[in-house]
Image 1: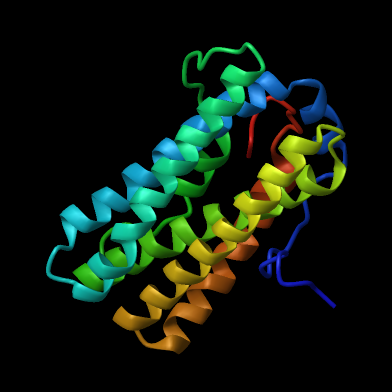
Image 2 (image 1 turned 180 degrees about the vertical axis):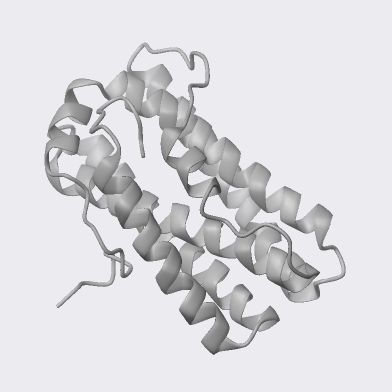
Length: 198
């Protein structure tokens, strides 16, 4: 039986990832910082594009602050270890996910696609944070990633709930299953890299 932090993902992270990641913790922290920045930016973008959706604005406004808070906390972890932020790098995982998103459709369908995309990224992030929490020797980072795992799992649920606010639940569930299958294929074909969060 799946526990609450697998979030229904079809394919778990390759166990090799966390071992490689632990040996490249500077790269992981830099990539993670940008992931948090992009998560905050994505929520801001949704609020700007759909300001008339009161439930969306109300739910995502605090998420923006929380994701930016995570960014600041990752920067703090970098500084503690004598690392610098460095440049943002290409995210092959998100690029591949973007190709699975349906183009066109009405305004509600476009919104749901964006919400489900965000839900999927948050779910995979929580799953990766779980791997770090359970497996890395650095106790401070282990606790840090446990806290973020819980937070990202909550965000995943927020995005799914919002999607079901704007389209029928059956439609959302069907589309979610399609995206989960597509994400599993992406995970199976991407190179296992320990210098990227995804």
